[in-house]
Image (tube, helix red, strand yellow):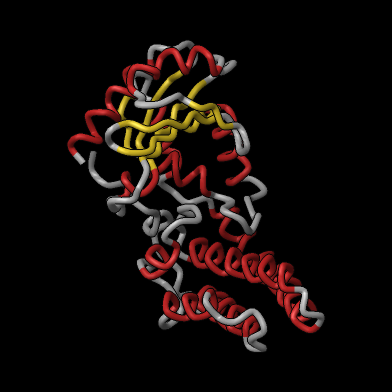
Length: 275
Protein backbone atom coordinates (compact mmCIF):
# COMPACT_ATOMS: atom_id res chain seq x y z
CA UNK A 1 0.00 0.00 0.00
CA UNK A 2 2.89 2.40 0.66
CA UNK A 3 4.14 2.15 -2.93
CA UNK A 4 0.62 2.58 -4.29
CA UNK A 5 0.09 5.59 -2.05
CA UNK A 6 3.23 7.21 -3.49
CA UNK A 7 1.95 6.77 -7.05
CA UNK A 8 -1.50 7.98 -6.00
CA UNK A 9 -0.04 11.20 -4.65
CA UNK A 10 1.99 11.69 -7.83
CA UNK A 11 -1.16 11.30 -9.93
CA UNK A 12 -3.08 13.67 -7.67
CA UNK A 13 -0.32 16.27 -7.95
CA UNK A 14 -0.34 15.95 -11.74
CA UNK A 15 -4.11 16.39 -12.00
CA UNK A 16 -4.85 19.04 -9.40
CA UNK A 17 -2.98 21.72 -11.37
CA UNK A 18 -5.14 21.22 -14.49
CA UNK A 19 -7.82 23.80 -15.24
CA UNK A 20 -11.09 23.01 -13.48
CA UNK A 21 -9.84 20.11 -11.34
CA UNK A 22 -10.85 20.96 -7.79
CA UNK A 23 -9.98 17.78 -5.88
CA UNK A 24 -8.60 14.25 -6.27
CA UNK A 25 -9.53 11.31 -4.06
CA UNK A 26 -8.82 7.60 -3.70
CA UNK A 27 -11.92 5.42 -4.00
CA UNK A 28 -12.93 1.81 -4.55
CA UNK A 29 -11.73 -1.09 -2.47
CA UNK A 30 -8.47 0.61 -1.51
CA UNK A 31 -10.28 3.50 0.15
CA UNK A 32 -12.36 1.04 2.20
CA UNK A 33 -9.49 -1.23 3.16
CA UNK A 34 -11.03 -4.12 1.19
CA UNK A 35 -8.39 -4.42 -1.53
CA UNK A 36 -6.38 -7.50 -2.40
CA UNK A 37 -3.46 -8.35 -4.68
CA UNK A 38 -5.71 -8.18 -7.75
CA UNK A 39 -7.31 -4.83 -6.98
CA UNK A 40 -6.86 -1.89 -9.30
CA UNK A 41 -6.48 1.67 -8.05
CA UNK A 42 -9.53 3.88 -8.52
CA UNK A 43 -9.01 7.63 -8.39
CA UNK A 44 -11.64 10.33 -8.73
CA UNK A 45 -10.88 13.78 -10.12
CA UNK A 46 -13.62 16.24 -9.17
CA UNK A 47 -14.00 19.19 -11.52
CA UNK A 48 -16.11 22.27 -12.30
CA UNK A 49 -16.73 23.80 -15.69
CA UNK A 50 -15.54 22.24 -18.94
CA UNK A 51 -13.30 19.21 -18.40
CA UNK A 52 -9.84 19.55 -19.92
CA UNK A 53 -9.34 17.48 -23.06
CA UNK A 54 -8.13 13.89 -23.07
CA UNK A 55 -4.95 15.07 -24.79
CA UNK A 56 -4.10 17.46 -21.95
CA UNK A 57 -4.90 14.80 -19.37
CA UNK A 58 -2.71 12.31 -21.21
CA UNK A 59 0.19 14.76 -21.26
CA UNK A 60 -0.16 15.27 -17.51
CA UNK A 61 -0.22 11.54 -16.76
CA UNK A 62 2.18 10.13 -19.35
CA UNK A 63 5.23 10.23 -17.11
CA UNK A 64 3.44 8.15 -14.47
CA UNK A 65 2.29 5.36 -16.79
CA UNK A 66 4.19 2.31 -18.03
CA UNK A 67 2.00 2.23 -21.12
CA UNK A 68 -0.35 4.54 -23.01
CA UNK A 69 -2.98 6.46 -21.04
CA UNK A 70 -6.23 5.41 -22.70
CA UNK A 71 -9.36 7.60 -22.48
CA UNK A 72 -12.52 5.60 -21.78
CA UNK A 73 -15.93 7.20 -22.16
CA UNK A 74 -18.54 4.41 -21.95
CA UNK A 75 -19.83 5.58 -18.55
CA UNK A 76 -18.44 9.10 -18.50
CA UNK A 77 -14.90 10.45 -18.86
CA UNK A 78 -12.17 8.18 -17.50
CA UNK A 79 -8.46 7.51 -18.10
CA UNK A 80 -6.92 4.03 -17.79
CA UNK A 81 -3.27 2.93 -17.65
CA UNK A 82 -0.80 0.65 -15.86
CA UNK A 83 2.15 1.42 -13.63
CA UNK A 84 4.48 -0.76 -11.55
CA UNK A 85 1.73 -0.79 -8.94
CA UNK A 86 -0.83 -2.28 -11.32
CA UNK A 87 -3.86 -0.96 -13.21
CA UNK A 88 -5.05 2.59 -12.54
CA UNK A 89 -8.27 4.35 -13.40
CA UNK A 90 -9.19 8.00 -13.01
CA UNK A 91 -12.90 8.81 -13.12
CA UNK A 92 -13.74 12.49 -13.71
CA UNK A 93 -16.79 13.67 -11.78
CA UNK A 94 -18.61 16.96 -12.32
CA UNK A 95 -19.10 18.57 -8.91
CA UNK A 96 -22.17 20.45 -10.10
CA UNK A 97 -23.76 17.14 -11.11
CA UNK A 98 -23.02 15.64 -7.70
CA UNK A 99 -24.55 18.58 -5.86
CA UNK A 100 -27.62 18.36 -8.11
CA UNK A 101 -27.84 14.65 -7.31
CA UNK A 102 -27.69 15.40 -3.60
CA UNK A 103 -30.54 17.90 -4.03
CA UNK A 104 -32.64 15.25 -5.79
CA UNK A 105 -31.75 12.69 -3.14
CA UNK A 106 -33.11 14.99 -0.44
CA UNK A 107 -36.06 16.23 -2.53
CA UNK A 108 -37.91 13.62 -4.59
CA UNK A 109 -35.45 10.86 -3.70
CA UNK A 110 -33.30 8.55 -5.83
CA UNK A 111 -35.16 5.28 -6.33
CA UNK A 112 -33.44 3.53 -9.25
CA UNK A 113 -32.58 -0.10 -8.54
CA UNK A 114 -29.04 -0.11 -9.95
CA UNK A 115 -26.53 1.59 -7.66
CA UNK A 116 -28.69 4.72 -7.38
CA UNK A 117 -26.60 6.27 -4.60
CA UNK A 118 -23.20 4.92 -5.73
CA UNK A 119 -21.74 8.32 -6.64
CA UNK A 120 -22.92 9.68 -3.30
CA UNK A 121 -21.06 6.81 -1.66
CA UNK A 122 -17.93 7.78 -3.57
CA UNK A 123 -18.29 11.41 -2.53
CA UNK A 124 -18.81 10.40 1.09
CA UNK A 125 -16.32 7.57 1.50
CA UNK A 126 -13.40 8.29 -0.85
CA UNK A 127 -10.16 9.41 0.76
CA UNK A 128 -9.07 12.95 -0.18
CA UNK A 129 -5.58 13.08 -1.67
CA UNK A 130 -5.68 16.66 -2.93
CA UNK A 131 -8.48 18.95 -1.72
CA UNK A 132 -7.12 22.51 -1.72
CA UNK A 133 -10.58 24.08 -2.01
CA UNK A 134 -12.19 21.82 0.66
CA UNK A 135 -14.67 20.52 -1.92
CA UNK A 136 -14.55 16.95 -0.61
CA UNK A 137 -14.77 18.09 2.97
CA UNK A 138 -18.00 19.94 2.21
CA UNK A 139 -19.40 16.97 0.28
CA UNK A 140 -18.62 14.62 3.15
CA UNK A 141 -20.36 16.92 5.60
CA UNK A 142 -23.38 17.28 3.29
CA UNK A 143 -23.72 13.50 3.07
CA UNK A 144 -23.17 12.58 6.72
CA UNK A 145 -26.96 12.47 7.13
CA UNK A 146 -28.50 9.94 4.76
CA UNK A 147 -31.25 11.49 2.58
CA UNK A 148 -34.54 10.27 4.06
CA UNK A 149 -36.47 11.00 0.86
CA UNK A 150 -34.27 8.52 -0.98
CA UNK A 151 -34.65 5.92 1.75
CA UNK A 152 -38.44 6.27 1.70
CA UNK A 153 -38.63 6.18 -2.11
CA UNK A 154 -36.53 3.04 -2.37
CA UNK A 155 -38.38 1.18 0.39
CA UNK A 156 -41.70 2.08 -1.24
CA UNK A 157 -41.00 1.57 -4.93
CA UNK A 158 -38.34 -1.12 -5.22
CA UNK A 159 -40.49 -3.96 -3.81
CA UNK A 160 -43.04 -3.22 -6.55
CA UNK A 161 -40.28 -3.43 -9.13
CA UNK A 162 -39.12 -6.72 -7.60
CA UNK A 163 -42.58 -8.20 -8.06
CA UNK A 164 -42.50 -7.33 -11.75
CA UNK A 165 -38.98 -8.70 -12.16
CA UNK A 166 -39.97 -11.94 -10.43
CA UNK A 167 -42.96 -12.38 -12.74
CA UNK A 168 -40.77 -11.79 -15.78
CA UNK A 169 -38.16 -14.22 -14.43
CA UNK A 170 -40.72 -16.99 -14.02
CA UNK A 171 -42.02 -16.33 -17.53
CA UNK A 172 -38.50 -16.47 -18.95
CA UNK A 173 -37.84 -19.77 -17.17
CA UNK A 174 -41.08 -21.22 -18.57
CA UNK A 175 -40.07 -20.42 -22.15
CA UNK A 176 -36.39 -21.30 -21.51
CA UNK A 177 -35.27 -17.77 -22.36
CA UNK A 178 -32.00 -18.02 -20.46
CA UNK A 179 -30.52 -14.60 -21.34
CA UNK A 180 -33.68 -13.01 -19.92
CA UNK A 181 -33.39 -15.20 -16.82
CA UNK A 182 -29.88 -13.85 -16.26
CA UNK A 183 -31.04 -10.24 -16.70
CA UNK A 184 -33.98 -10.54 -14.32
CA UNK A 185 -31.93 -12.44 -11.74
CA UNK A 186 -29.45 -9.56 -11.79
CA UNK A 187 -32.33 -7.11 -11.45
CA UNK A 188 -33.66 -8.91 -8.39
CA UNK A 189 -30.18 -8.89 -6.87
CA UNK A 190 -29.92 -5.14 -7.51
CA UNK A 191 -33.28 -4.50 -5.86
CA UNK A 192 -32.49 -6.67 -2.84
CA UNK A 193 -29.17 -5.06 -1.99
CA UNK A 194 -30.43 -1.54 -2.75
CA UNK A 195 -33.27 -2.07 -0.30
CA UNK A 196 -30.92 -3.41 2.34
CA UNK A 197 -28.54 -0.45 2.03
CA UNK A 198 -31.47 1.99 2.12
CA UNK A 199 -32.88 0.29 5.22
CA UNK A 200 -29.52 0.78 6.92
CA UNK A 201 -29.12 4.35 5.64
CA UNK A 202 -26.02 3.37 3.71
CA UNK A 203 -25.04 4.63 0.29
CA UNK A 204 -24.73 1.91 -2.33
CA UNK A 205 -21.04 0.88 -2.48
CA UNK A 206 -21.17 -0.28 -6.12
CA UNK A 207 -21.25 -3.67 -7.74
CA UNK A 208 -18.11 -5.27 -6.28
CA UNK A 209 -17.85 -7.27 -3.03
CA UNK A 210 -21.58 -6.98 -2.40
CA UNK A 211 -21.73 -10.03 -0.12
CA UNK A 212 -19.15 -8.51 2.20
CA UNK A 213 -21.00 -5.20 2.24
CA UNK A 214 -24.41 -6.72 2.97
CA UNK A 215 -22.94 -8.90 5.72
CA UNK A 216 -21.67 -5.74 7.45
CA UNK A 217 -25.11 -4.11 7.60
CA UNK A 218 -26.42 -3.76 11.14
CA UNK A 219 -30.03 -4.47 10.14
CA UNK A 220 -30.33 -7.48 7.87
CA UNK A 221 -32.29 -10.68 7.37
CA UNK A 222 -30.83 -13.80 8.95
CA UNK A 223 -27.91 -15.24 6.95
CA UNK A 224 -28.50 -12.70 4.20
CA UNK A 225 -25.04 -13.04 2.63
CA UNK A 226 -25.25 -16.83 2.48
CA UNK A 227 -28.77 -16.69 1.06
CA UNK A 228 -27.76 -14.19 -1.61
CA UNK A 229 -24.77 -16.34 -2.50
CA UNK A 230 -27.07 -19.34 -2.89
CA UNK A 231 -29.43 -17.39 -5.14
CA UNK A 232 -26.57 -16.06 -7.27
CA UNK A 233 -25.15 -19.53 -7.99
CA UNK A 234 -28.52 -21.28 -8.40
CA UNK A 235 -29.27 -23.05 -11.68
CA UNK A 236 -31.17 -20.77 -14.08
CA UNK A 237 -34.05 -23.28 -14.20
CA UNK A 238 -34.37 -23.47 -10.40
CA UNK A 239 -38.11 -22.95 -9.80
CA UNK A 240 -37.41 -21.34 -6.41
CA UNK A 241 -35.07 -18.68 -7.81
CA UNK A 242 -37.53 -15.78 -7.87
CA UNK A 243 -38.94 -16.72 -4.48
CA UNK A 244 -35.49 -16.71 -2.87
CA UNK A 245 -35.15 -13.01 -3.68
CA UNK A 246 -38.78 -12.14 -2.88
CA UNK A 247 -38.48 -13.74 0.55
CA UNK A 248 -35.41 -11.67 1.36
CA UNK A 249 -37.11 -8.52 0.10
CA UNK A 250 -40.17 -9.19 2.25
CA UNK A 251 -37.93 -9.62 5.30
CA UNK A 252 -36.12 -6.34 4.58
CA UNK A 253 -39.45 -4.50 4.27
CA UNK A 254 -40.63 -6.14 7.50
CA UNK A 255 -37.53 -4.86 9.30
CA UNK A 256 -38.46 -1.35 8.26
CA UNK A 257 -42.12 -1.77 9.21
CA UNK A 258 -41.20 -3.18 12.61
CA UNK A 259 -39.53 0.11 13.51
CA UNK A 260 -36.19 -1.62 14.05
CA UNK A 261 -34.55 0.79 11.61
CA UNK A 262 -35.05 3.87 13.74
CA UNK A 263 -31.91 5.62 14.89
CA UNK A 264 -29.47 8.26 13.84
CA UNK A 265 -29.63 8.81 10.07
CA UNK A 266 -26.25 8.23 8.47
CA UNK A 267 -25.02 5.97 11.25
CA UNK A 268 -24.90 3.05 8.85
CA UNK A 269 -23.02 4.87 6.09
CA UNK A 270 -19.72 3.30 5.10
CA UNK A 271 -16.84 5.25 6.57
CA UNK A 272 -13.65 5.48 4.55
CA UNK A 273 -10.44 3.86 5.63
CA UNK A 274 -7.77 6.17 6.96
CA UNK A 275 -5.48 7.65 4.36
